[in-house]
Length: 349
Length: 289
Image 1 (cartoon, rainbow over the protein chains, first blue to last red):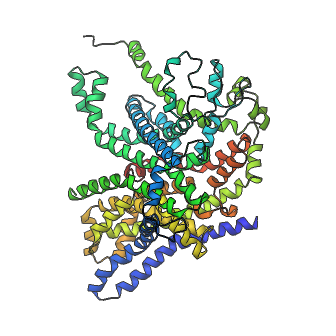
Image 2 (cartoon, helix red, strand yellow):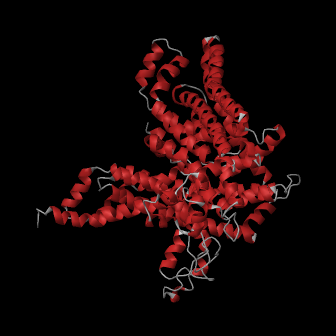
Image 3 (cartoon, each protein chain N blue to C red):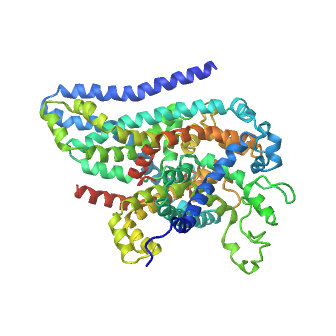
């Protein structure tokens, strides 16, 4: 108990130094610079304001990134130069190839479905009176951590042998319809026991080898988390469409579906792009869900979780750095687009 | 063409719309609701049948108890972790706010060489994957003896949160009316005075948005805590303890459900109380990954 009191005291001191302290630094430096001749004052003051931010950004983002780039060309203990060996590993190792395949599935399915679904929901809720309540419920998962969401979904995927009462919602549903319960997080693909076994859809059998069931189960969690985010941003864009444009189309005899395809989608295309890229970046970095749900076992690893494995479990800093660098390379197009969009925005200001 | 539709047919035509919206809303709530109900069920009941069976006797309150919460808080270290999470998240929110606000003001309203370049760099840093920084920072921490301390995560979260904070606040502060700031400068107000008396009060909505965003991000973070706090259970936040619980006691649903809900209660409260600011932060910060 006294331990906790100490802890809370530490927190209070930290909050005090954090807010009052940083402010005191700014204030003190400001006072010092104010005493200088005007010319020097005008030159130095901006750096007093920028200084702490620049120090933190350099120490935690710029330098480590450069250092990781450098480490990616060294061996596991960061002693010997090994050229591109770590990259060769990252691109050809069978486990890494699976991680790449999984990441591709994650990217396609999460961005496609959560943006698509988010857009449809955004347009639908715009037409009902209880819009804000519905939006809150769908948006709610955004506040939940990946770990919390993983526990929620582990419960939904829970598996008990056939014949007993299922505690997992999905297997209980399957059992109600007379289907065998599935090990959602265990099954690599549908070969062992296709999802649709017993539904009379046997001609679908070549498909399952392409779809690893356990990875799909993890992807659904991310879709559940991200759809609300997409919906909120797209809904703001949908509301931004001038009412008279929609009204004019309706008078011209366009039906709701035509309005959606020919007017709403083209008009909010810029927002759709921004939302999709945001989801893509989030998916690239996803690690928690895989780490908590399966630990990356049974072919469920993605690039970000492989990186942690190489770094933590195998202590191979060269390979870990090379894998991290691949992640960075993947987000560089997004980075360039952001910078370009920003410079345009500034030019119009 | 029929102009006057009876209210009844209009209602029927809109039925599919209502059905779709209500179904989706329920579907999205169901997973969390199931967890919530389960967290109050007894251990043996949880393993015997699904949470939906409680609706067979909806008025039988004896099937619920709060023992799971007491268990997980006291014996599984969740209570300690809850305090740790607060100790981590509050400073990791306050520190970046003050640093970012000063920097944002300089970038928006002060003249200095390289200003534009600096801001472009910050926009670029928005999407740098954290994974890119873990190994060097962890090594530096190990050498400095910082690994496993609160300070390590406070500073790391400050560094990682700054690009978004500066970006968001600079855009907001930069859009304040120029006349206002120039008038104050003409009256002889120093930069510090303009900053504290004018900029900070006017920027409160943006500061609040960033605060909510950063707080939720830190509270929900697993990666930074896992890497920089390592196995130090004394400082582990709720996410880390919950993840260990999944690893060690994956079938003890009475602990997992209650534990998960404890880890979610603060974000959910923040979410419901400050949803407006959270959404605004999201809208402004949707370039961050």
